[in-house]
Image (cartoon, rainbow, N blue to C red):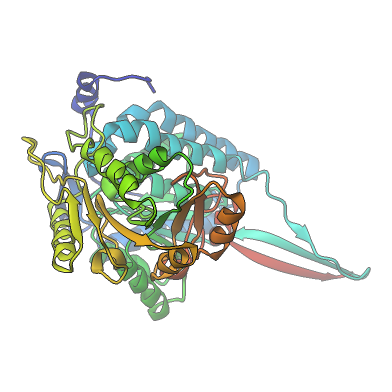
Length: 498
């Protein structure tokens, strides 16, 4: 990937894209069985960029049949770990070769700034593919401690056919977090991307096939949640379903599992993450600027977005002034411009939803100190200015519900005890942060926070080597790290009497 690209370079890549909108089933591109398609609209300018196959139950059946056939035949499952590793390494290498193309495609599809697609998203995906490619021949099974006349082995086996349903905010990234460990362990995979952002998933399937992933092992069925998504949830021959998205839909998948074959369901369902700023915050300006940039990252369409700023009343005025000044400088612009720091919300309906929360915040008595409106652009897409509320109570709607936009709610507290109480007073538990100079204070508070990830004096740091997931209604199971492999494997005990 070229380090620096101008806007004209990026537009040149855009003009050369050969966008495919078909499903990818059993190693080839196919239309939906019904022949139906839907418009894929770019949030950048509201223009249709592709016609995409509207897959439904019949297409999910086709994909599951292909995935099961490949699994039972052992086309991928029975390859040696070293052979699977080599194919996955080729997949990663092909992905790396096409990173600029995929970054532009991602930006067109869901509106994020190209600077983020090129420096964050594709690099995280590459890291994920490379890391899990190295796993198959590094994992050892176990021998249980038994008496001299028995031998008990504990082996890890692929679960079978895996359904992966991923969201529109990080389409490639979330797909890789599920695909890579599932494929590394020898499973067959059916991926349903969000209908708002299916294009990079389709392209990745093509690259996987080119790398040597056997037919039927990696399938992509674009379509809508109530049709293709529901069909996957209810399918009697999908062994495991991994989902990232809203809590409302996550609960539906749990219901679908109970109504069908009791498939295991793993969920990552968002958050309302607290960013706790204590009175001894190190480098106050750095923390304030990070609070502003983090809520604007990816337009606020981030499950770990620090949407609740829990701020010590002793420093509230000074801190909030810097947050507001920083956010004011982050202006929405053309996502294909490398200088843009805030792109477009994914679709017009979602923009309206974000704006309804802004109105609700004002109705319930929160003080609007910045934004709340649309920027003046001539792009025609779906943009909202960074928005900051002060004087927010944790009981207000904007402090309870996930807005998924660049909207920050500031809540002031008197002491550590109140900060922890407010932070944990939520149905979510995905992430949290605490800023303090006192290491003991940081440890005490971190241990009390009910969240899957806790950052100290930073925000949203991580790596493929550490697990990601949440407490409470933020979900179950973990993506990333070796722990993710637990979702896609079964443990078998074999007891031998000697």
